[in-house]
Length: 215
Length: 215
DNA sequence: GAATTAATTGAACGTTCGTTTTATTATTAT
DNA sequence: ATAATAATAAAACGAACGTTCAATTAATTC
Image (cartoon, rainbow over all chains, first blue to last red; front, side):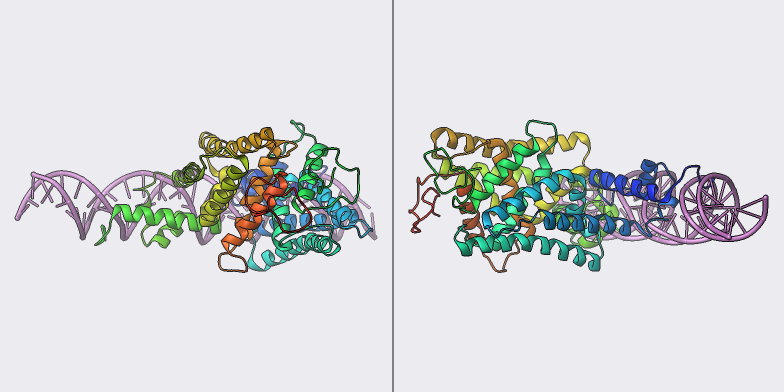
């Protein structure tokens, strides 16, 4: 046999990407064989090389597009207003929504960095650092305007990102909590963590803890 | 050649463990070959099989002992007093100290779970869950005594653990921050996150944010 | 409808993998 | 000293790996 009836390069490539994300997330990059991936797509291993020159190229492509997607999502979600609390809220909401929606791809991007060449690792880390810098900027502006109270913005940014990204480790759609509930809780925890003063939304009815934003 | 002068089973086994933790942390379990590990120890690959029947046995041993170490460390650090704030502080301090001290082993235990058999995965996850339950208990007690204000103790426990464990991703000893500084910052962030009321330590000098514990 | 291009198969390549077996030497106990 | 045991080396095993190549068929273009 050779070319199969109904075969379409674009569809095959998309199927390869999808299957690769799922398989790498489940088995790990090193543990997934090209034959396994091909079988998942319903094709022979050799066919994969029409779309990706090497296994590492495939991994890199998945990671790069994931990071680009994250960056673009934040570009869209970023509020025009300068209010630090609103901006931080938007960052948290976007981060959680994106990571829950693309749990598998996030897993791949976070866990398989060591399988990249030095050059490509640098490239991905640069994109990640740029994204994280956005959060540091929001935090710093909040400190300057007095909206937040933070010891160390760099450290706090890392702590927040680890906390938020960690959602994908335990969150499973359709279980006890909805995405909206999880997001609300994380937003609330974030605002307390940065010592946000009340500057938007309704005031907390509770008698205590007057300095945290009610959400 | 065969047995080498000065060879000692106990020392070799210890060297294998040490080298394995370091290599797996750096390359990943699948990417590390038994020959590579043997070379690091200064021995032939066949010699490894005197100490660990299979590669997976080696991985499992490393993980199990890491989890046992974490559990025992908390047993020792757990304060006798029932004060929730003090207990939470002890949990955070122990967690961060342990994870920074054993960064590589933590990396292995967190990243290579998928290389375990189903049975052994269950065993490790059971130990992890038991350790995490300790934190949930501390949080719940704090809520009951009114020391903490938390929406969802389960979710908050996961968020805190992700945040704290995340330290190993970016922390490098001897860089900008000392372990003590990092621990102090994380303690402060944790107490704000759980809405801790002042119940120990000195009051915060700052005029604002009267509800967070000063550390 | 013939020529060209796109998509895929099937077989094979050399390499590396985890692991086993057997032989050999160092150490310890008698 | 000699026997027993512990620790390793050296070589080999079959299997699986990523990748390449030539052949073959489907779809498209002219």
